[in-house]
Length: 250
Image (cartoon, rainbow, N blue to C red):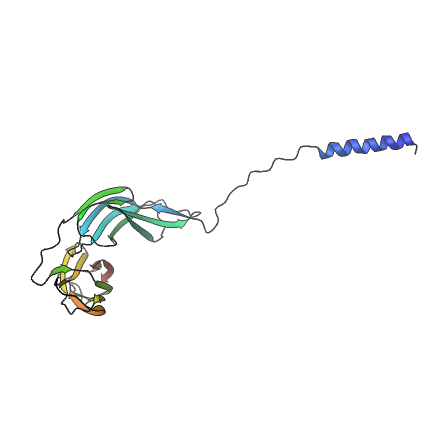
């Protein structure tokens, strides 16, 4: 091969090698993001009504009777979160479900009694439950003191509530309540109860004289309370100082 032929061959290789290497690269395809199996979404319950219910105790306690519906037919547990922001009581009710699940196109009624954390001694509060806002006004003054003291549920902690039917429907219900006092004062427990539909609300309190200093507890207690009315068959709820238990009369 002559020098001229060798130079022509070298130029040929250089030309075609550069042309192939400078060709346009294919554009990257757009990635499709798929939800992972662990991804979830919160679906708020649609709230139709919120009824505040002040319990007969001091400091006062609050329950909310809430009605509405779930906007889909998926069977996931309803969750409740609540928070206090100044004089605002904020409650969120929702279900949490996997993002990839398809639900039946039906609505599911929702009706619940929600105990609000903490206690109240007076004032006006705004209650916000999902998309519904209402107001509640507590008595501005404490209950009238008796010669023995002021009725109070403070330092009385309810741990367990066990309703038991003593007969067939119409049934007499005895509720066994256990817990403890944070002090060691030997004072009688005062009991009051009200009824709202299928819900019985029991308030336990004691009268602590203002000049008495109690020794440190805890002091356990157990008390049986008979509901004021006999009950027919079906589901019922009893709430004792904010502790809620559902039961069924067979």
